[in-house]
Image (cartoon, rainbow, N blue to C red; front, top):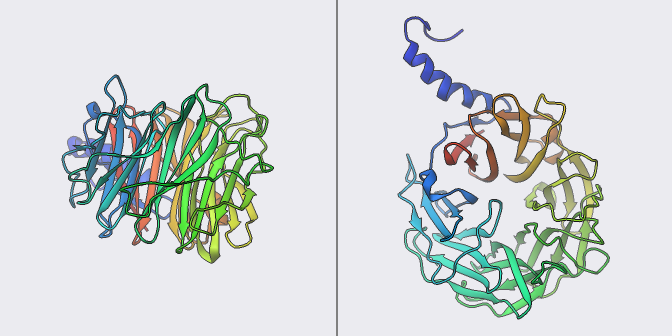
Length: 407
């Protein structure tokens, strides 16, 4: 029963429907989500949204605006709203901005790093030392060799605050791709160490899918994991490689994807990777190996590099034909939330679905909730700290949106 009479208070009822009901629909699996807040007007774009937390828990959002004059923007949470967006300093470089990638971000203390690309020129890093308020000119992470191209950078920060960056290095015609890793030892001022992070994967060929994002995870002082989609004669599945010498060499690898998807073109969808309880890594990704576009999650023991379980996420859409794509995951120990796009919802077309578990990865596919709102929702990103999940995504009507989910 509603807490007021529709006849007596129609305006309140409309507000109730507009704000409270969508929140309820997205709160049925143990997470209570705040109403959506816009970090910026839609005119500033909403491509490749990324979110990270400063050391005090403040969310910082970064995203791109595509077009003839591409830009990268940043806004930070002030307690009740986001600050006025600030343009990230990309110097004379026109950043490659795509709907799903082209840039990435990471934080350390109050420092914010944004990595971006120019396919023909190189990979670049912009840095803010005051939480995203002001930005230094970008430095070159990697200069593209003649006849080559580089794309889809990803970034993480080690325990000392040094950025680690991966990207796809391939021919200019977008073939023969490999995951290269660059590491800084001076806080991102210079980069001089480069490693083939995909080398031990895919039967030691190390070839990667030419336009799928990677993800990086650091552990302790010396261990680095890289998740990516391999390409073995058009068999495109997910692998995780490991270095135990501060990314100097990658010597261990595991195929975490049993779907064995064969496709002769790039699906432009990469994995995401987190650490959970018991030294277990959890990777999430999309595959059409079954004949349908679905998202999956699999576990991997970080010490033995042996795969554990693999889960296919069930349908939340009522449609007989639906697609799932672009998953992300966040959490700590056994508290995990996974989010993805799903099509087939009446009236909205494509919504976000969140799977939530407090019992580890194996509980994810039994506890789902749908975020139903006007406009196509896509490319979600999620982070977690202190009992709060922070979700950033793009809405086709309203632009970039942010929600906060509490346990």
